[in-house]
Image 1 (cartoon, rainbow, N blue to C red):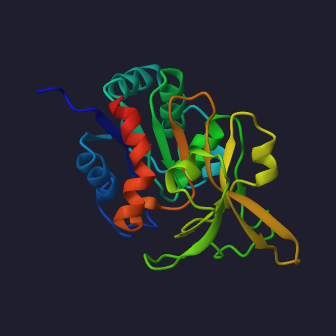
Image 2 (image 1 turned 90 degrees about the horizontal axis):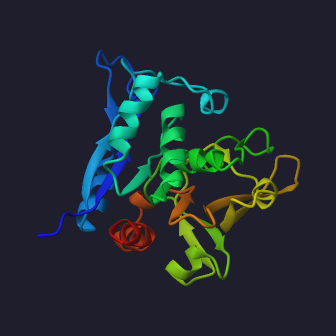
Length: 251
């Protein structure tokens, strides 16, 4: 029997916000990503932070690019990353350098990678494009931060994009659980970011604001960021959204 591809799901530390008063220090992998990998004919493993003692970075924007790993930790981490045929960057309330390093490693060895929500942010930063807060864009902080599995809003899919090839439609109804954004104008200035889908909103001052909902990295074997959470969408949506990533891992 041929060995199955290994999908590494990069674990994230639980924060005090997510699990208040917990006496344990924990890292998590969402079951939905494990299920996505295993039902897609792959093996799922959790890629733990390489710290000797877990840390939580509550200020994502300020610290993601700052190397807080020792040489030994980097070597240990790359040993684990080297076991993987593809990487999943999960959503969450923060980001840290070890996730950024995982993306840079995957891109350097042409490993397929997919980033969800906060993982979208990390993938974006790893190719040199910055993320903007809702406040900086003049948007209400809770506009796209709806903690619900039933909420949906419309996004526009660009014809000719990877996402259009996957779903074959000009618009999608997706969920929304984030307070940070990739401004379309910033994305279009970066040749390493190919916009696949956008959403249009109106700022508190009445100005139009267009942000990116999905992008790919040109010339990468497979690298895609989703601002929404396809793992919480309907099964058919999950299958379509993750199918090309799994195919790239199997290939």
